[in-house]
Length: 90
Image: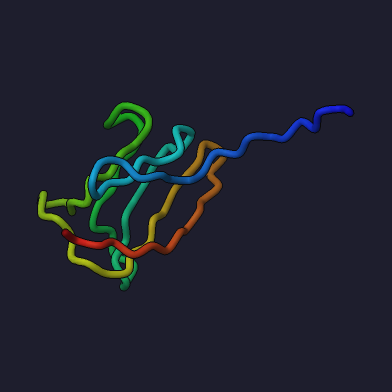
């Protein structure tokens, strides 16, 4: 029986801490958008160590409200992924 080689895929994000997200280490930029598409948080790979992490706060340092958000992830080849998610405030 021959083993089947499966390509391991990296997920775009995973849980980090109690309320945060850790993003794919190949991402060059990550933005969290509200329902209207306005950026409430954004980081570029030069500003922070890789991987980029979001702890649930907005630009002002306040924890965002429970609700629907969109995660915009930019990759080195300029590919952009938009992923909807629900943030639950504790």
